Image 1 (cartoon, rainbow, N blue to C red):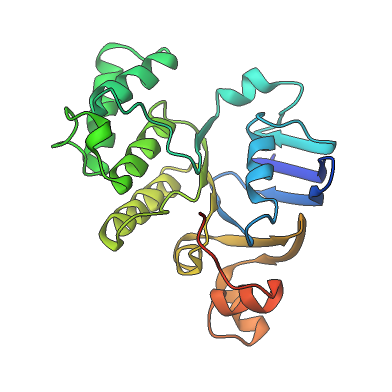
Image 2 (tube, rainbow, N blue to C red; image 1 turned 180 degrees about the vertical axis):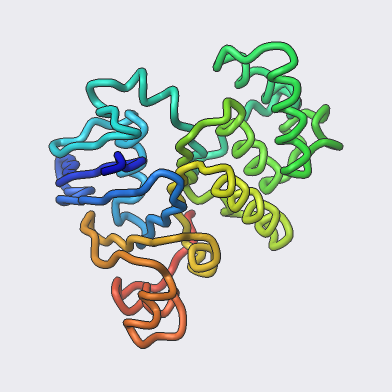
Amino acid sequence: MVEPGILIERLVKKYEDVTAVDGLSLRVARGELFGLLGPNGAGKTTTINILCGLVKPTSGIVSVYGFDVQAELCKVKQFIGVCTQETAVYDYLTGLENVELFGSLYAMRGDVLKARRKALLEKMGLTKDAERRVGKYSGGMKRRLSLILALVHDPQVVFLDEPTVGMDPQSRRAVWDFIRGLKAEGKTVILTTHYMEEAEELCDRVGIIDHGKLITLGAPGELISDSGVGSLEELFIKLTGRRIREEA
């Protein structure tokens, strides 16, 4: 049996006054583009933070490419790239300097970094603005740069936490094409989004969670058909009982 790209078994994360993740179990295949969906506070970001080793679980098993996240975090970090909800860029540096800095943190040097930097800036439409200070970028441009920084080292597993928030439709479509390209390269991608059409368009499978629990799992088209609704958004509202809300 092929080892899954990501394995989550009976995952629990409790804080003093709330259980953020409550017995979550998931298997994501290598090369799969998986959508982790849910209302605000459902446990999506907590789950991703646990997968990245940023938060310790209360209990449960979490592994990436066969490596236990808690016991073998250094090995896990070699495989993953993370684009967080918060824009992780340095405003006082240029776009180019940001990419070079993050590349150097992954021990990338010379022609390898130069070629990767050039390709990513072109794909994200930032080549012409690469030598501008990032403080002068629009919010959408900063989000695109954050995506570049998460992927500069060419990771095999990519976590995209609300990657298109605040983007105009044109930029969002460009990012969709970029995400499709990651799948075409065989990368394992975990995507969280509040744009249900985004998940419906991009994902092989989606899992909808609420109050830290998995409430449905499957391919978007199959879930829509089986539920007798017209779209993933309708299914989301039906299952969670909440309207989709933008992050503040």
